[in-house]
Image 1 (tube, one colour):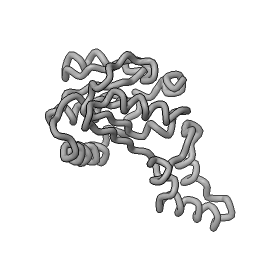
Image 2: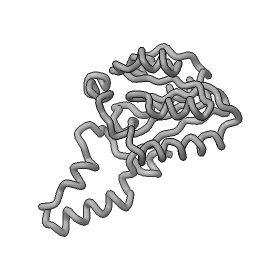
Image 3: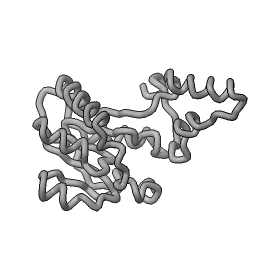
Length: 178
């Protein structure tokens, strides 16, 4: 199960940096341009709710799914953000419930991404939006990491180790996501 592998996920702090917050703000502006109205937004794998807090301040009603979220009660009390503490595929969500569903750096970790995407489409309202962010396997950074490894005759592997981690079950390109 994914929830077992990511048992300490909510202790991660990398999504609360100024750079990440700036990216989240830009993404919220972009998302708002592609939907008719701001309504319910579900962030699957929401961690500590950083993206959801920003979404709330932008006029969205925030919901999250995070199997291991000790901050769930605090997010509900302080921000009225509901965190469903369950595995997404086992959660009890209604069809056509959300205007937007987001998966930030999550789809590459699941063993059955097609099933996840199908489930996302069922819970999104008509004319809603599914937003997925995942590393691009054929990106410039990916290519540079391979080149650095080859040029160093295999001595420089740090970049590849950061790109290809044990918790990534699949690697996507722009083409494979379509």
